[in-house]
Amino acid sequence: MSLKKRFRLWLIKHPGKILIGLWMKSCRWKITGDGPYRALREAGRPVVLLIWHGKIFVVPFFFRKRGILALVSPSQDGEFVARLMDGWGYKLIRGSGSHPMKTAWIEMIKELNAGGEVMIIPDGPKGPDRKFNLGAVKLATETGATMVPFSFTARRKKILHSWDRFEMFFPFTKIAAVYGEPIEIPRDLPPDRQEEERLRAERIMVEFDARIDRSFD
Image (tube, rainbow, N blue to C red; front, side, top):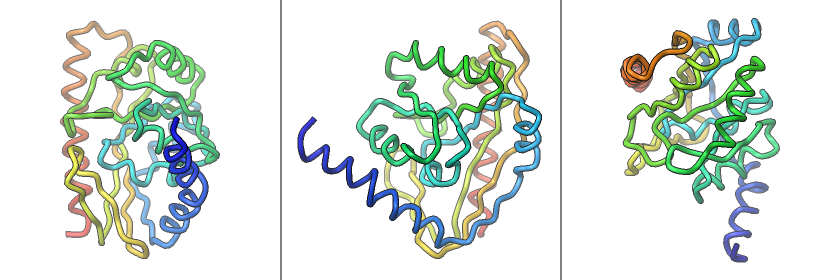
């Protein structure tokens, strides 16, 4: 790794983390829909958190100190995210749909079978945007975990011209952070039924996210 890249990663992990923390704390947060999610966690039920790639801006700060197992891409962008999340109470594991992930899969199965929580970006790391990959459904049907969507939007926001329509927001604005209704997947589904559930989950996630985006209209 070059000296320049090491320095950039140091900036992200140290001053960058402080800046992001102050940025997030300057905003006014309204959190809704978290009742069913918290009930699942308090009952020791395994959960797969679902967040579109374009909505991960709040993730390192918002979900900190919960012991969530987060699947992070081994790409360069994923390395930046991992440096931000490191030290904020996550269990980080590297892998993605476009990289070999046998070890990561075993760790996620183990975590869910123990009643833990795994965070999945179902359209990551390269899209297409809002196209739900099958991995989360496979995890749920193998372990009995419940999938829970999450999204956010802001009163004063900026949508980047990237493949995932990445959403950021300005400091001191109002944030709506919303958990969706849990999505239950039957155990041990055959492959054709898994595809049906993937399409159902994708439709739910797309409609849910579009509804959240209208929060400040």
